Length: 386
Ligand code: PSV
Ligand code: MN
Image (cartoon, rainbow, N blue to C red; front, side, top):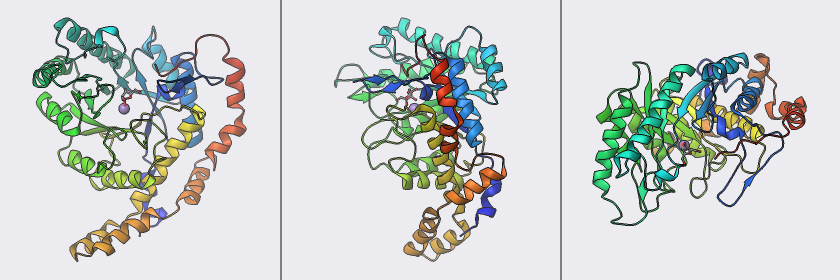
């Protein structure tokens, strides 16, 4: 097995993108719980995200969701982010919260609704031009609830057409990232249910289209690392939305439900050249329903770092040799030795050597930041994920 000193170089290059919506109130369709000190606008969300980066050194980029994070002046928001030591990242479009989208957005039967959804995505590209963002992330709630409700095949054609109109507005350095999800809110069929559909649409669009893999968007038991391997093979893995789930898409803290799965995914990312690699954006997509938002994000980025360190510790030469000797148990042991290595003390030392707190969670609670925002952020409307 490799030693921590062997992996420090690549590990230092970890840059996790955090979602602005993680700092707002969240919940389920049954209840959204308010927390004291919750941001009331995108600027305050950025302040909280910057706090996570200050304490961990891992999260210098913040993803925005439009219209949740719409402001009058995006240049001002980008400048504010820079003053806080972070930058604005992926722009997520939202075509799932308007009455017009009841029967879909980019796949809708009615060209008026499709045009509205296309125009929204073009507006997002215009925002990207101001924020300096590279990626437009599209997730669609489009689908049907009942067999026969609409013609699934025509919907794919409409999707291809709508996406190509959006794609045409990207600059040479911008990318379109298409996220898939197998069900919810559509319960019979989703128009982009899986990586195969997303990939086919991306291949049709051109070289600036990539697949986004949200770890929560698969049926139980899916071998997600295999999907990672496939997408990296064809150079179309654009980004991750990291989270974890026990049952359906519940957006829990990444690595909480199944740390071993996160390790396996990150090992395949490393093995396939997806890390360190700025073309594969490691992003979180989470909601903190019952835990403190900022502490939840701190834990999340540390979980990714821990599992990435373990994945980097795998001695790939030793692994290849065992594989070539056709030794299943020997090869498996090489992986498991790395997985079972407790990297937390070494990571704490690494943090201290960089002037960061050894224990970012404890440092957060001791910092007084939470008390400060609770005292300052009174009145106004708290942000929530909707
Ligand atoms: C959909 O479930 C999703 O994963 C998409 O990424 C959305 O943009 C996000 O959740 C909203 O929380
Ligand atoms: Mn997602």
